[in-house]
Image 1 (tube, helix red, strand yellow):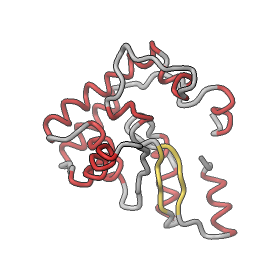
Image 2 (image 1 turned 180 degrees about the horizontal axis):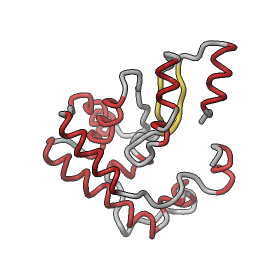
Image 3 (image 1 turned 135 degrees about the horizontal axis):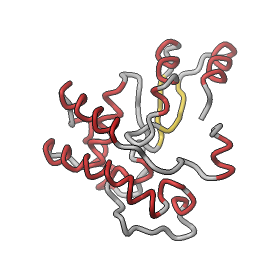
Length: 174
C-alpha cells in the first residue's frame, strides 16, 4: 500500500496506470484521500481484499477459529472477540443480499464497483463456483436510496481490530 505522497512522487517520474490497496466495506481508508488523488491523476485503483479476506462473503461465524498456518490467525480483526463484534456488518449485509437476491460476496463486490468508475477489484479464489459468483457481482445494482441506506449502516458499525498485526502494520504505516 503506497501512501498518497509516494504515489504523487512516483507519478511525476513515470506515470502510474494503477495502484493497489485494500478497500472494502470493512476498510474504507482509501476514501479519506487516496481515491481523490487517483481520480485527479487519472490512475486506476485495484483494491485487494474486497471481500475482507473472506469475512464479507459470510465464510465465518462467531465460533470460527483459525489454524496457526492461516494468516487470519494473526490478524486482529479475526481474533474471537473482534470477529464476534464485526459480524454485525455481515448481519446487516445479509438483509441487503436477501432483498437483492444476491450473495454476500456479490453485495460486497458490487458496492466496491459502484464507488468510482476507475475501480477494478481483485479477489482471490480457488473455487470455480465462487469465481462465477464473484464475476456476477456486475449484475448487482444499487439505487441511490440503497447506497444511502448502506452508507448509514457503515457509519453506525464500528469495525473492531486492526487490519494487520505487528510488523505487517508497520509496513503499511499503521
